[in-house]
Length: 247
Image 1 (spheres, rainbow, N blue to C red):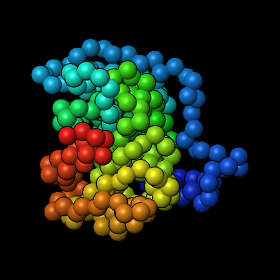
Image 2: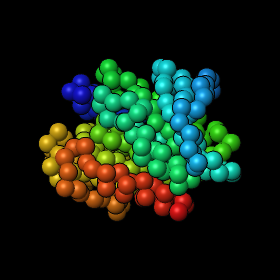
Image 3: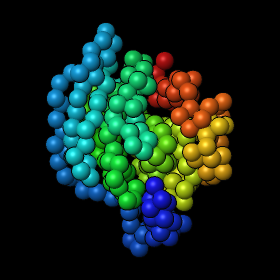
Image 4: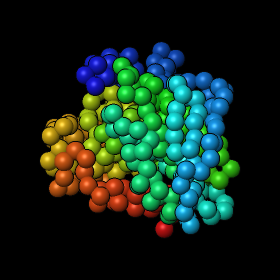
């Protein structure tokens, strides 16, 4: 992550502080016409309200994912879950399932753990949003993202770079230059969560990201460390459901 922080500062300078122009192109752009090559390998878990599908698709590279689909008919909101450093698609599967039981199509993806910039993380996430928005059972106007730790930094960048997002949840996110820069541009609704005993990011790093959020975001501190606690994830699921019109 040390290299990511230095890259962050450089990219902020490249992007500038104003609106994007021909002189300051989006550093996270990608070919939207490129085939996703999405593949549903079948159902891994099945319950009365949802089914968990094993998915793969092409982002910046090959991406493994779980897609959780409600059994109810019609179009649903969709939410992407992004794990922290060293994690996999399994890490946030439980809150993804919990939100799906409320009526959202959700997805968790495995992000690479050997990257030297945020670009592949952001592109993978944007391609996952393409996949979700293109589904017949998804309302493309009701999209959200939840990110934990490194995934929270990625979610902060997406908040400012991805105009399709309506609700952005950030848990234990570090306030590096690039996440703060892009978060300040967002028009999405925000919910930032942090642990009072987080020694991995530290209170100054957590507060920098919170301070960079525009408007009046929802912020909640917990009596917990970097990994937070079950209450924090339950609060995030409930907030996403509220913002996306679910009960």
